[in-house]
Amino acid sequence: MSAQLLSTSQGRTMVLTLSNPGHRNALDPGMYAAGVEALSVAETNPEVRSVLITGEGALFCAGGDLHRLQANRQLDPAVQAESIEGLHNWIEAIRTFPKPVIAAVEGAAAGAGFSLALACDFIVAASDAVFVMAYSNVALSPDGGASWSLAQALPRQLASELLMGGERMTAQRLHTLGVVNRVCEPGQAMNEALALAENLNARAPNVLASIKELLNEAPQASLNQQLAQERNHFVRNLHHPNAGSGIAAFLAKQKPSYE
Image 1 (spheres, rainbow, N blue to C red):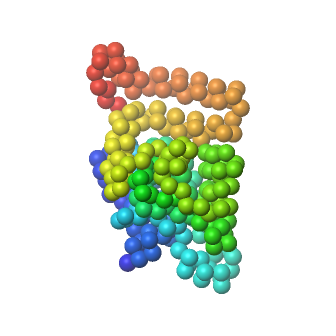
Image 2: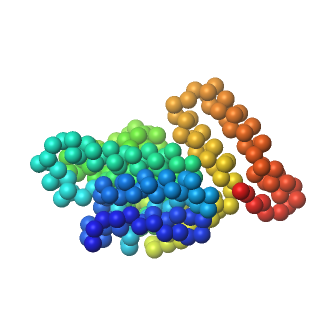
């Protein structure tokens, strides 16, 4: 069976499933394009409040297909460059997507599979899941934004350990380090991620979009710039109809309903 990205719905959550069972859900250029397209559709669909990315079966993703990479060594370097651009387009689409994106990880998230999980806003992982930046193990450097994501999330020494040493890390250790949000029983990552998604789905979409934009801008902004952006977002959200609903519901001790 060929590699594909399956799209289904669970309530107000779009579920994207990495499906490449013959190659441990390894990523494929077709998946990248499908991922960008799925997010484009979800962005304009008000019925979709969040997106969940998972792997088919008991494995999240083994990263890149080494057989394909070996074959690409015989081709013009532009071929591999184009493939990586496709992956990076998907990573950027996840980062700039105005709705929450959750990775539900069972089994292993390796190489670009780990990079993909890091691009998400939340990571939910089974307690026996393992994460590995396997690039240096096969004489390759990282892609998929791995160096950026880990440099943002961890001290340099820990990012170096993951990227240079290629060591496997458990979900529990990454949870302790603040990279994984929730650790659950094996086989329950999807259910736990959907519960998290439902909590997010009940919140005002415009506010979640503002928070994601602010978080994206913060690393490059000065405090003064970030304060100005927070002011602008706050004022805009205060005058959005959802703020009226939310404040009124809170004061009346009722459950709000947001558009």
